[in-house]
Length: 115
Ligand SMILES: [Zn+2]
Image (cartoon, rainbow, N blue to C red; front, side):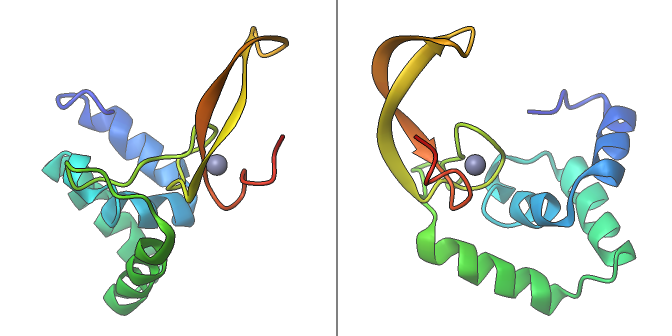
């Protein structure tokens, strides 16, 4: 996800990321994160006043619905970073416009109602 050597870009990304995204990355996606990137994200959450208890709460909530993969990471939504809560058929679209063939899309709680 991040080139391991490009920490400056990661730091920039982390500063602009939504708190919810950072919470997801340090919890359900933790297994796939670079240790240095994790450190940056945890530091940023701390700076935003998010306590370790809130992070643990977030993880517990996510794990109730997330689809965990064998490598220890959550399956992510096809449309955003959030963990997918379901997989549903949809149309694969050429340039996002022309339906080509049906395929299964992983969808999060936000994108679950999208058809
Ligand atoms: Zn989504």
